[in-house]
Image 1 (cartoon, rainbow, N blue to C red):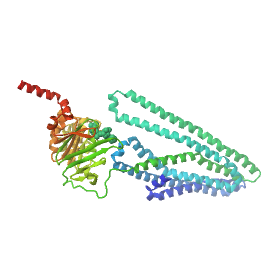
Image 2 (image 1 turned 45 degrees about the horizontal axis):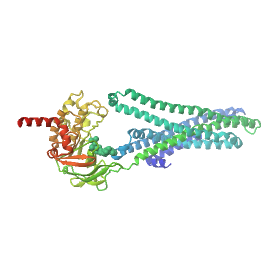
Image 3 (image 1 turned 90 degrees about the horizontal axis):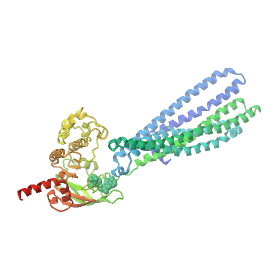
Amino acid sequence: MDVLRQLQGFFKERRHYLLFSILCLAIATALGLVYPTLLRRLIDDVIVPRNFEDVPMLALTALGVVILKSFMQFLHGFFGGRLGNFLAYRLRNACYEKLQFLSFRYYDTAKTGDLMSRLTGDLEAIRNFIGFGFAQLLNLLLMLVFGAVVMLTINWQLTLITLISMPLLTFVALKFESKIHPTFQDMRQALSSLTTAVQENITGVRTVKSFAREAHEVGKFTVRNEYYKRNQLNAAELWSRYFPVMELLASVSVVLLMGVGGYLVIRQSLTLGELVAFFSLIWYIIGPMWSIGFHINNYTQSKASGERVLELLHQRVDVKDEDGVIRLDPAKVRGHITFENVTFAYGNKMPAVVDINIDAPPGSVIGLLGGTGSGKSTIIQLLMRAYNVNEGSIKLDGMDIRHIKIKDLRSQIASVFQETFLFSSSIRNNISYGMNNVSMEEIIRVSKLAQAHDFISELPDGYDTVVGERGLGLSGGQKQRIAIARALLKNPKILVLDDATSAVDMETEHEIQAGFKEVMKGRTTFIIAHRISSLRHADEILVLEEGRVVQRGTHEGLTSTPGVYQDVYQIQYADHIAQTASAAEKVNP
Ligand SMILES: Nc1ncnc2c1ncn2[C@@H]1O[C@H](COP(=O)(O)OP(=O)(O)OP(=O)(O)O)[C@@H](O)[C@H]1O
């Protein structure tokens, strides 16, 4: 109930809908009791004494009850639907907003499929339960109480005898629920793994095809599909057993009623009308008993769903603005970056970077070189304050970035990552992502700088061409050039190029770098690169190994000092060095 109490906070302005919905359903249920009473009057007061002038009145009453009952049911659905949808809408918005502000740390371990199912399946379960299930569960109790009270007022002995099978019916219903519930959970799990397989397969279609793994993928899917089918069959078998058993038990009441009730009528301790009313009342009570398991199941499932949604909403955001943060005036930002003894570890792992010191004055270019996993990207992540440093500090123009408004800090940094993410929208929208009121001229200007204008112009719809999901349909280099244009449009004080030219050929790299020279002017630039050619003009190059800076200096200084940089240089420039050496030999034999 704690979950329900917490969820209540999301619909407190519409709490009256819940009350109306329950009230209307209760009235409809109470009206349902009028039928047996009318039947009883029809037999005892009309048919038996052949008093037929009362028939029209009884018929009109029945009609009135039907209409009123239907109207009450309509109102229950109306208010329930409004309430459920209002709550789902509020929760969906709250979850989505939370997802925007959750830290990178959360996304390091979060699974897309799981998050999607919280925002869809779980929300749907909550919507149904709060909108309808809750009222119906209460109503079920009301039906039992109302029905039993009316029966007791007719004949309490007969009531006790005929309701003898009720505990057994309840027991079977609950037992059934305890079996079907895990089966449903397995089914949900199986469906989730089936969906994950489809999602992964579509996302990684290029990898699958390039490794000719179609048959393997089909096999993997078949196994999961088989498992899902088995679960479905289990559930179907349980259902097929449930209804006959329930009917059998319910028939015990009916048989008892016929025997004992018939005997009482013969003995004239019960009227014929009362016996018929009893029949109708017994089904009025047994009906809800059949679905008691379903309603309880609905409740437990929604409770679990509520917990999952609330768990997401209660996630702690560890990187957030503190009170009294500094706002940046873009015109005054100079872009002086300093790292002072920075150490950082992801979770409980070994530190990813240790004791990093960098001084990047405004407009300088810092190169980061190192093997895979050496900590290059981590340095950039820390600069953007994706994570808080564990030790030391990072400063922008002398201010610790922890004291600067995150939005302001990030708006001063533009990055081009190794992996370019494009939204399924037009190229123009992708380039101007996050910016308002950008003119077409501006978009074209930056695209030209990023060497993207030519290939965009050749596309059928030019800048209005809609790129597929994550940019499918464009080459890696083309996507990267769009990302570069996007970064240039932001006109940042700090530029991060994370292996930004790795997906383009040498010639294009050269062209892009020539363009970059222009845009890097006046901006502090961090370049992460595997190719020395991308770094040679940097003001300072940091060579990283296992999170530590093992060498630092300019290209000239590092090439003339024995060490990692010189080794990498010799490997990457082997041909060039050999040529230079033979040319020198020819001159000085
Ligand atoms: N999100 C993360 N969660 C946990 N550990 C991480 C995460 N990102 C990186 N690491 C770890 O931190 C270390 C440094 O990784 P980082 O990505 O900074 O290296 P890199 O030099 O950029 O590598 P690459 O050139 O392959 O991109 C590695 O040991 C890596 O496994």
